[in-house]
Length: 289
Image (cartoon, rainbow, N blue to C red; front, side, top):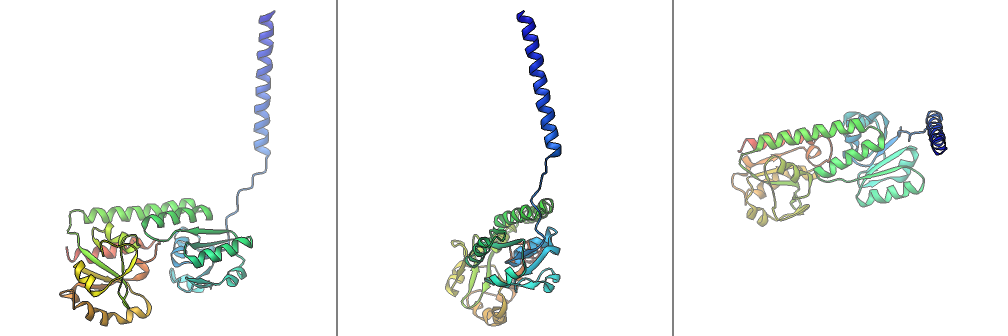
């Protein structure tokens, strides 16, 4: 009797399990799954973000950029929402964006907070060195749905970094002063994108015991004993190059041969074109190694 009861109970349990399994399959086949829609109208608050968006295949969805955005060339045809450091909230809202991407600088945080209160989807990404660039690419890839393209971009960046490190291995470590301004002199020290690029290429960014973008006097420049000076100054600062070279000549011997101007858009934007920046940097450094 017990054996018969045990068999009946087992059959009943099996029937229930099968029924529950069928119900689960039926529910999964007939449930309405609505994935999060990809943003079709995107506003960028920084040149680096604009370049990342285009690099991962979102260029046709970008409807607003800053006055400083100039790459790729097609961005000249896109509506302007103000300067990088001063985006215009009303201009952004007028574009009816599905996503607004900014950085962690104060003016961006303020605008992003105001947009969020109005129900506009936002994304804040870090801007700085190589590590911040990788984080930004991943976050933008997820937010736009272009995850595969973002991973492809990251692989290209990693490949360029690896190649630069290998090509500079065993070579002389040049001491490099990377200038971004002249009045007064402003250098890119540790923790900045130019400094990261210099380290990858096997150089020593100056001043050594400093972080961030730092003002430096001629006396300090002399004490750091740079082998080379790379100048990525922008706008009106670039017009003062000749005057600055004369000043540097007082503390750096043979400055005319040691001074090079570089494209600030390549070296100071935390974007996909750091691949080109590394190639340019290696060409300059290898002339002196």
